[in-house]
Length: 200
Image 1 (cartoon, rainbow, N blue to C red):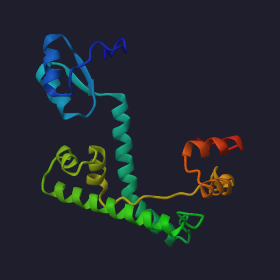
Image 2 (image 1 turned 45 degrees about the vertical axis):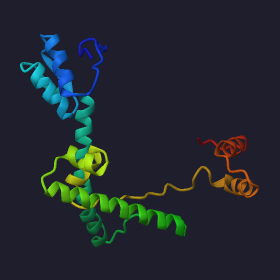
Image 3 (image 1 turned 90 degrees about the vertical axis):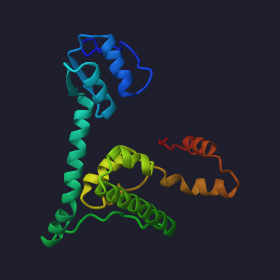
């Protein structure tokens, strides 16, 4: 993209440092390179236009800031919760409505999978593996690896219940139709849509 016109000027054949370096060498005179956090782009920019100033693009700047803020708040969450309890307050319940046994079992299974993944990430990080290397080995995104590496402790998920669900009034109708043999989600959605359901 041309930073001054905000228009695309070319499309690279692949996302590699070699492709970027070759393009920059073929188009000399680039003074500024705004890029994401990709190591390939950093290497390609350094090789193809070593005199150009590399800067982080605005979207990734805010993304970096948000991720750091989430990590800091995540680390402080447990101590803030304890302070609230010590001062006589009570933390908000995670659920205002009782969850079914199948929901609880699914939640516990999901937590165990995430915990195992977190422990694997921490172990590989302690061995000196790179974030990209860990992501490749465990088949997860680098963002997840980065979140786990900097978390300081296993990041528990926070469940918040925001009152009555939109679908609540239509559940009896849905159950009746399923018992009658209709299991096509599109058909069920159209039927409750006709009854006034506002959701997607």
